[in-house]
Image 1 (cartoon, helix red, strand yellow):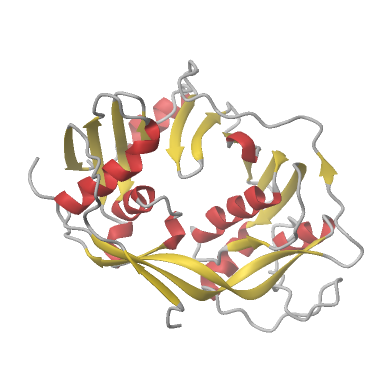
Image 2 (tube, one colour):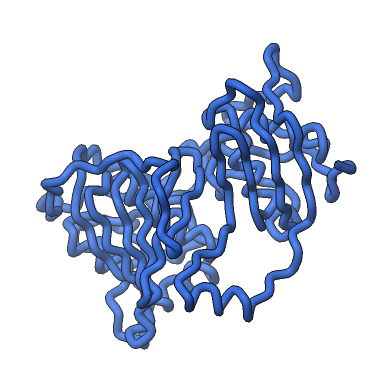
Length: 320
């Protein structure tokens, strides 16, 4: 689709923030045996973005994810050459005196423009999305009694914890001994992800989560399989306790369809655009059935989606 709105992002701004010193190196291949041993011992791998008042590190990150961080975008909003999703880099940088964590994206953006010759622009385009809607009969959600709290990025961490910086602030990740992962998202709530090998499914248990935060979690998971962005169109406010399962079959169906969905059967809300239910030999409830049990619906819609289009980027950075 042609863009309905475009905004050119100039490589220079009146006040350009930059790191004092920064090194960029291609990420070395993972030592999977060491990684597995560390995880088994309860030591979290230190991947992703880590920003403090004095230092910024971006470890084993695809260039596409670095670009998304630099422009305060989501990973699935970045469009560019295929290789930017596979080429990974390690960046270590020193923050200038008086800078804050909030300045890090602008500094990373300046670094990518300088070292990778990055040029990009934002476009608002109409895309197919999966909309979360309130089903006929109303939502059947359990309201949270507790209030979600911001994540303190400077709080001491256990060996099985790490903190990563994202566009909505720091996220604390805890890996439990059973392999489950707890994502503390600050004001957006907490999500626990468990892999159920017996039922061939991913289970998500969200606490104190907003519907927009829940939609963002689904978007992140489905984007990894080539699925569509999930958008909250319920109009519901507040924080909720939500548990769903996503079968491996559903995830594989998302990967096969790549956004081109066949006409589905009508859902209980009477809509003819409800997303199709994937067959599930493992026996776990379909994603769409799980959503319907909450008194909600997933429907394919078209909506304006902001995209960051990479116009030019070099495959290797200039020398440190």
